[in-house]
Structure formats: structure tokens, C-alpha cells
Length: 634
Image (cartoon, rainbow, N blue to C red):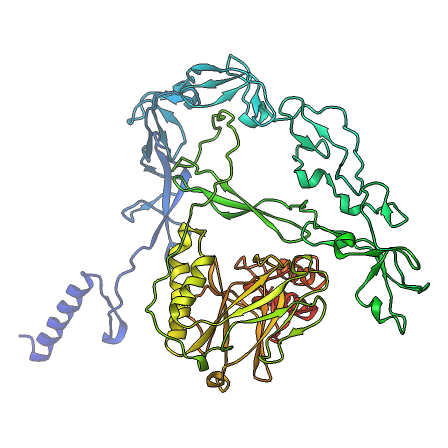
């Protein structure tokens, strides 16, 4: 009979044998190996690649140490060295191109399927019937041709050659078959004048204006200085009689028979004043002589025809009026036209800064034009749109104005003395007019003081008779705000007038400097703001305080209102914007320089905003600062 130890030993051995049968190894001396069985990490190696329709072949490898150079199937069963397994065909990956009809501009197609794997083309999605893209194409349709008849150009209307248009696709063609494309511009015939032989110049005399040499259009009778299509105005053609010297003999002109005063001055060394050509915006002068000889006080202010002897000349004899013949630059768009609203464009005279505006017709279309576009029939150029105007009624509460709130207690008159200040000693009112301001010669300054706000309103309404309707509400608002400031004791008003010997109101060609006393109640004001009442409303003007007086740079004569507070309903511009186009550019510097050399005059708010350095004067220094600011912000 087995002992107890033998029985236990036998049982243990039976257990070890059972464990080994489940894949666990036994170690010598009775130790157990519990390491898991190896699992294959299989990677497919292709020997023949599968396609959309054909099977491929290959085998799997394992990266285990004991599996080197061995082949396996997908389940991990070992293969022989040359044995392979089958790889299934991939099948087609189809993308459909839908059928589309042909047009006269584009081919059509019957539709097809393209495999993304093999790039082959098939009629059906199953890929059973092969085809090509070319075989599935549908040829373009023929154009539906309509003739655009030829039209001759005129002086003002463009014409065109005969061409053809497809009524379906709007394509343009030079041939009836519709094979050669073209554009409306290529078929356009420019408008052109038919010029005559040059008409010879008709010389001016001191008695009669002359006419410059020019051409005439034989079709429309317009006149041109050159064969450039730019119509000449009467001012462009005119040779002013004032440019021609008188032929004086014995104190009388032999041409115009004007009589002159023979000079009694015996000075043989008079001072020459050089001739200055007139421009479109500024008067010039003929050469003349003045006498500054000691003891010749009677010659003061006189002009003479020669360095010695000769005759005495008047201002009219030596003044050459502004030509009015402007030299405009390129057109600039101010406001773009829309489908329903006209725009605006402008041209600026490169000499005097005069601005000419014209309307840009509304486009009449809310969609972008297709390419190519059908040419529009030439039309007669649109005449510039003249803005509608109206008289503005000023409505303010009537309030009396005390004498102490006025610059002058009663109306003041001061006779103008060109080239030097003229002053009323009792009130301190003075006026300085440029010696070359022909319009202001032989005039008198009138300064009127109001007794009530109704007086100021009446002055304003005399100015506001022709205000653009679109701006009338804003103009009314700014003027009434200015008058109400006076009514509230925050300022004073005065009406400036320049009248000739017949008591008719005139306006100066250039800026006039007017000095008026400041009422005692306002002399301690921190600042005074000067506004000019014009058709544009209350506009800010250049001024400064000097010894209890306010010096106003008056561009024209009408009511002025001086306030202790800045008005809020007045249009403002950026400092330096001399041409008031709401942009600070080199043109503003040019406008300042032209003002400084008397070529073009800045007035009212233009003069105020040109004062870049704030010294209450406009000079070349302001132009320099404008250009400097442009460089700094570039």
C-alpha cells in the first residue's frame, strides 16, 4: 500500500501534466513557467496587386523573433516559402457627372461615371459599359445671330460699325457666322468734329476786343483753339482791348479818340511799375510809371504813360481785367452714380482753383453688366444738372438789442483808400483794400448796427434768396443759431456793405480787412468766434483780436455775427483744408500758395481753414505745414 507522501506526490504530478496540456511549461526542480503563448502581429505583403476588377496575391509576415522569414495566411497559419494567399478585387469607386444640355457657348454631356481608383469612365454606375468623356460630349448649339446696324458718328454722338449679336448669350461678333468675337469698344466710332481751315486772328485795338485764331466745326459751328475737341468759350477766344496800349498824340488817342491829361510833372526819372499779365481769376496791369520825387506831392497816387513827359493814366487805363479763360484739369468723381440717383463730377482750374461741376447720369441698372456686354446706342451728352434753389425764411424771436451790445452805436461810413488803411477816428472802424482790387476802387464801407434780432434776420434774408434746396434746412438752422446767440447776449452783429458812388452794393475781388471795436461787455471774453452769413449759412472766417478791436478778413460783404461760444450747426473742415473738399491733399498747399501770390483768392471758411499755424494770417508757412503733415501721415 502506497504511503501518504507517495500519494501526495502522485497527485502533484498529475496536476503538472494537466497544466502542460493547456500550454504552460514546467521547469526543472519543480518550478512553473507562466509566460503567455506568442500572438502573431501580421502585416500583408503584396506580390500581385488587386485592381477594381481583378484579384491579387500575397502573404502575411510577423515581426516576432521566432517568425523571421516565415509566411502566414490571414488567420496566422504558417505557409510554405513560395505559397501565397488570394487578395480580393477592390471594386470601383464611382463619381457621377450629370447630364447637361449644350448651349451656344458651352458643350453639353450625356452624363457618365468616373472611377476614383482606376480613373476609367463608364456609362453605368456598375462599371459594366466603358466609355470616354469625349464620346459622351454634346456639341455646342449654333448662335442666334441678330445684326447691329452701322451708325455714323456726329460731332457729339458716337457711332459704330456693323456687327452681330447673339440674342441668347449676348455675345458680340464681327462676322455673321458668329465665329469671330469682338467688343462694343472695338466697333465704336468716336464722336468727332469736322474742322474748318484755321480762322485768322483778329487783332484787338484799344477801342475793340480782338479774337484769337481758331477753328470752326462745319457741322455744329462750335469754335476751338486747337483740333482737340475742347470747345472754346467767348473768354477763351477774346483778346481784351485793355491789353492794347493807346496811341497818344497831343493828349489824345488816335485810335479810340480818348482824351488824356498831359502830364505836368517834369520828373525824368519816374519809377517803373512792371506789366503783369491777367489770369483767369485775377486782374493784371499794363506797365506804367509813378513819381516819388521830393517836392512832387501833387504826383502822389498818379500814374504816367512814360518815364518822363507823357500823360496821366487812370486805374481803368492800366488795369487788365481777369480773362475768365480757365484751364481745367481732369474730371474727378465727387459722388458715384447709382441705379436711381445721379452722381457728380468736377473739374478744377489749375490756375485759379475755379471748380466746374456736372452731373453723372444714374446707371439705371442694379446688376453688374455681363461680359461681353451689348453696346448701348450713343446718346446726346447730358447737360449739367442745375440744382434747384429757394429763398430761406429766417424765423427768430424778436428781441431788442441794447446800444452797449453793438460794435457801433449808429451806422458808420468810411471812404476806401486802396493800398492803405482808411479809418473813422470817432468809432475806430477801419478798412484796408488791396491796391490791385479793381472792384473795390472808389467805394465806401458802410457798417450798420441792429436795433433788434429782426434787423439781423432781414439782413440775412437779403443774402439767402438763392439757396440750394437740398441744403436749405441746414443753412436755415445755422443762421438762426447765430442770431439766437445775439438774442441771448452771447454775441453781437453788424452788417458790412461796400457801395459805389451810385450807392450800389459791390463785392470785392479780394479779401478786405475790416476792423471794428468790440463792445465793452465782450472785451473780457475768453475767445470770440466770427461767422459770415452767406448762401452756405453761417460760415467761420479768419479773424484776430488787436487792442480791443476785432480784425475780420472779409471775403464778401453781408451780415457778420461775432459770438462768445462756438456754434454747433456750422459745417466744419479739417485745419489745412483750404479748398474745402473734405480731404487734406497737396492741392490745399497749392491753393494757399496761389492765394499768397495773388493768383487765386481764398475767402471766408477757405481762408479760415488754410491758417494751419493758427497765427490769424495765411502765408507760405501754412502751405509748408500742410505738406509736412501729409508726409508725416503717409
